[in-house]
Length: 64
Image (tube, rainbow, N blue to C red; front, top):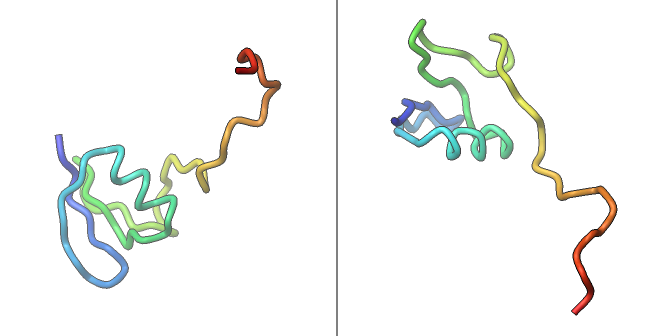
């Protein structure tokens, strides 16, 4: 499944959901197409986690 996306420079493209998340995290998306119509970043509600961060919990792997 691909999602139609308009980037901030006006380019239209199709990406997989993981690609959309990556582009959203890098603030490259102006809007993207939903089944209900276009969702505008900064205007419409979007499930958005912000920047990608690494694991911050306790290290549980064995040291090599």
